[in-house]
Structures are given as structure tokens and as C-alpha cells.
Length: 464
Image (cartoon, rainbow, N blue to C red):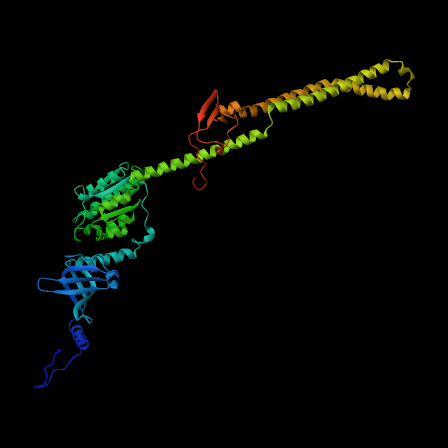
């Protein structure tokens, strides 16, 4: 039999221990006698350090023991320990030597009374995870603006009221279709699957514009939530044609339906808030987008108007083009007159006395020139007429192209010609305007007297 304190021989003085050595000896004796150990009790005075370690007291009516659960073990917890939880822990008895305190170093923890149920949960979770049902890559994102939302819960559940209230507050324009089902009891898994299937059929067939399905219920014990750990329900969730969001129990409650869903919300109300963005925010974004488009269109119209004015300035005035054409016609007319004079001179020379003195050699070239002049005289009126007709048609086309650019037409499109009322000089740039200045605006059909109250410089590209 192991014993820490041995009887000293009669009359012998007891061994004198160093404090550290005594504490280590006690620790060794306790570890050899009790470890490993499993303890059942109530959690009290629980704290979580910044390092991730848990420190708490485990107690019952007869006593208590201080416990420490280090970060590596705490990371494996499926729930967050809270004050008053009944738990079963496994670990080892140890002595914290710097203070000589007895403590239990916890290596695992589970809720008391749920050990068998929890083990079933973990085995089923591992098997379904191995099938890839919980894989992150198959998860789908929640649509930012769903056209409609399907809701699966009990009509008597408080979660129904919480979800509908949150959706009505945030997105009253989004329709919600309820597929009722029991959320607790032996018949709950079958009803939940049937309710989901109804929504799936409606979404696939296009009968209802469902873009998201919420599967919710309020908090409860592990037994209360066990319907959401049903294997058939997990498979049904994975087969959904649209994203599924769960909001089952409280923030610390996890079910297999949560792992299978595309998104897990901590509570039913949180699920409703994640499902629909506030209407006011969407309206504000639409207004901002509208303002951006209007500014872009205004800038585009201004650029096109400036480009049109530049092209109009490069085109010659119709009167100047017409004057040039008249000048060319005058040159052609002068050439025609000269040709006719040559013909008259030739006829006069042929009829004069000098024709008798010409030799036959001279008369033959003159006869040839005479014939050529005759042909030219016959062709000239037709050529001049065709040329004049072509020039008139070209002038008409130019007039049609230039008439929209006439100042009266530009003013009729909503533009105005500004000039200083005192000097009569044109005002073409914002830098020429000053507060208090009198300006005359020439508009289509008249003029208007204006006074500058404030000058706004053009926005820079960054500001736009």
C-alpha cells in the first residue's frame, strides 16, 4: 500500500522536507493514485483567458475543485462552457506547484446526461463529413437581393414571429412562403424533409421565385434539437436547388443541418437579417447609381456639343461657298465669251478681203480650226448647263448639312449665347463671369437679362 507519510521509528525525528520537494512528492502520489480521472459536476466561475485557456470550478453539493482546460483541448469543444452547465470531464489530477493548489487539468468535456447522444452525434458527423456533405467548396453564397424566400419552421414556434418581423422590417418587398413542419419529436425529420421538398419543387418548376430557403427553430436541449441531426434531413438539405440557411437554437448550438447548410446563422433572427439587406440601403445605392449615370450623360452631351461646335467652325459659311462657285462660273463665262469672240473674228476674217490673199495652204488649217470652233460652240452650252446644274445640287446638299448648325437652330436646341451687358463682349468661359455681373442671354425667340450670383468652377476628374 502506497502511503505518503510513513511512521518514523519510535523516538526518531520526522524528515524535514523542502517546500518544493514536498509539493512535488504530493503531486506524484496523487497522479499515481488517481490519474486518469473522470468527474461529473456543475461548472462555476468560468473564464476564458486571452491565450484561449479555460479556467473554472467544478462543484457539487459536497465539494469543489479548480479546473484548467488549455487551449489545445479547448479547441476541440463542440460547445462553450457556461455557468451552471452540468458536464462530464476527463483529465488528470495535478498540483500547481507555485501555489500548492490542487487542480484538475481537463483534457475533454461533454454535457452531462448527453454522453451517448453526443457520441452518436460525433459518429454521424464524421461519417457524413467523409461523404463530402460538409465540404466548404459545395457551399453557395446567399443572394444579395433574393426575389423570394422560402421558410421552413413550425407555425407555433416563436422563431416564425421573429423571422417574419425581421424580414418585414428590413425588406418588406421580398415575399416569404412558409412550408410548415414540426421541429421537435419523432415525426419532425420526415415533416421537415417534406416541407423542404415542396419548396424545392416550386423553385425548380418556376412556380415561385424562391432564391433562398431558411430552416429555423428556437433554442432547446440537445434532445429538443435532435431532429436537425437526422441523416436523411442532411441529404435533403444538400440536394437543394437554391442556397439553404439554417438558424437553429442559440449561438452555441450546432446541429448536422448547420454543417450541411450553405450558411449557418447563430439564431433565427440573425438568419432573417442575413437573408435580406435593408431596403433603405438598396434604395440609397440605386439613387447613387442614378446620379452617377446622369452625371456621365451630362458630361457626354457636353463633349458632343463641343465637338459639334468645333466641326461647325471648321466648315466654311454657305455664303462663302456660294461666292466661290459664282466666281468659278464667272471665269467659265469669260472663257465662253472669249471663245465666241474668236469665232466671230474668224468669221469676219473669212468674209474679209484678206481671205483672198491667203494661200490655199493657210486656208486649210483655218478651215480645220473653224470646224473645231463650231464643234466647241455646239458643246459649250450643254457643258456649261451640266456644270451649273451639278454645282447647284452640291450647294443644296451643303445647305442641308449646314442648316442644323445655323445659330438659330443651335439656340432652338436649348443653348444660349451670353454676352456682357456693358461691353457687349461674348462670355464663353466661367472665368469671364463674376458675381454681380449683368449678362444678356440670347435665346431662341428673344433675349433675357441675367445677373450672376455665384460662379461654380468645373469639377476636376477626381471629383467626378
